[in-house]
Image (cartoon, rainbow, N blue to C red; front, side, top):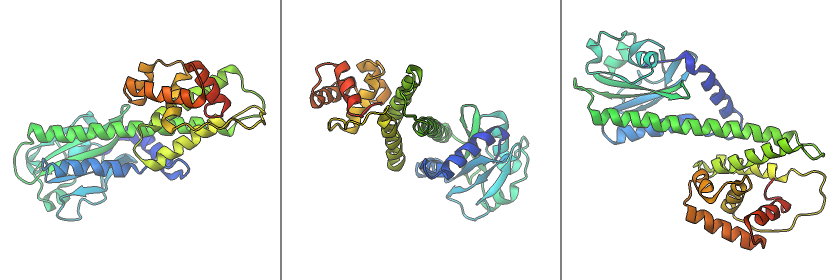
Length: 304
C-alpha cells in the first residue's frame, strides 16, 4: 500500500496522454486490471488489488476477491503500510501476518482487518526507474507467501511495466511524428530533417505492428501515412500500387538500410516471413531490387 513522488511526472504525462483524445492511448488501468485478474485467476492469491501512482500516493482502484468496499479508492501514501515500504525500497515486500508485522506502519489496519487479510505481498511496478503502479496479492490465512505465488505477482508486475514502457514509447513517437507532419513546409526539407522524418516513420511502423489495441494501432498507421504524404510541391498524382500494411512496414525498414535479419528483429517476424513480404512488394511494385522497390514506394507516396 503505497505511493511514490518519483512516479508523479511519469504518471502526469501518462494521464495527460490519456486525456488527449487524438492519441487514443488505451487506459492504463485496463492493463493493470488484466494483470491482477491473471494473478487472482491462477488462485495464487485469493485477493488481488492495486492502483496507479499519482500525487505522492497510490489510489487502489482495482480489486479481485474483496469482501468489502474498504479498499476501494483507498489512498495510500509513500512509506506508509506495506506498499509504502515496497516503494521506499523499490522492491517487493511481504509479510506473513500483517497485523503483527513490526517493520511497517499500521495506518491501514482498518481496511486490512475488514478484509481479514494476513499474508500480503506488495510489488512496485517501475518503468525507467519511476514507480507507476503497485500490485498487491493477499491471503487470509497466516502463512508465508510461497515462491510460486511471489513469482506470479512479480511476473505480473514485470509484464505491466513492459506494457507501460511500450505505450510511453508510442506516445513519444506519435508526438514526434505529429510535430513533423504539422510543421511541414512547401519547400524540400534538408537532408537531416528528411532522414529524421524517415526514421520516425520507420520506428512508428515497427511499433504499430506490436500494439494489440486496434484503435491505437490505427492511429499510429494514420500518422505514419501523414508522414509518407509529405511532399515538396509535387502535383502529379502518384502511381497506384496496392501493398499490404505489413509489406509497407517491411519496406520502411529496408528504406533505412536494414538487413532482412534486422527487419525481422524490429518487426518481430521471422527472416523467412520478411523475405516473403519483400518479394511480394517487389512484384507488385514491378521492382527488381530492394533499392528499386523503395524508390517506387516513395514515388507512390507509400514511404516518405
